[in-house]
Figure 1: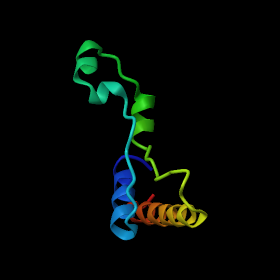
Figure 2: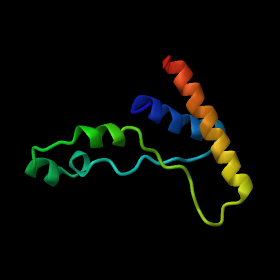
Figure 3: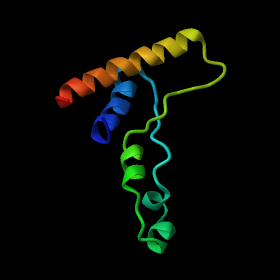
Figure 4: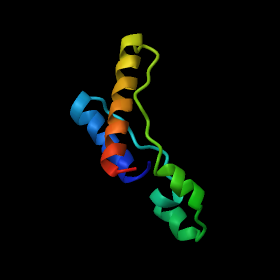
Length: 87
């Protein structure tokens, strides 16, 4: 999965479970205009991986119940979006 499916999983996590996920750490040349202008180099591997990354909520004060709830919600959302994408 990646890109569109990842984005739908993030949205479904919020809509269905109230869990905010974050999309973080895209390649710097995709977000910083000066770097993009200064270099013509691109990394297809970095681009592909960045399209798949999402960050689930984590904090040392989270309970075991919180961890299980978030994990179960993620698995359900991911499975739903993969099935809907037909992959």
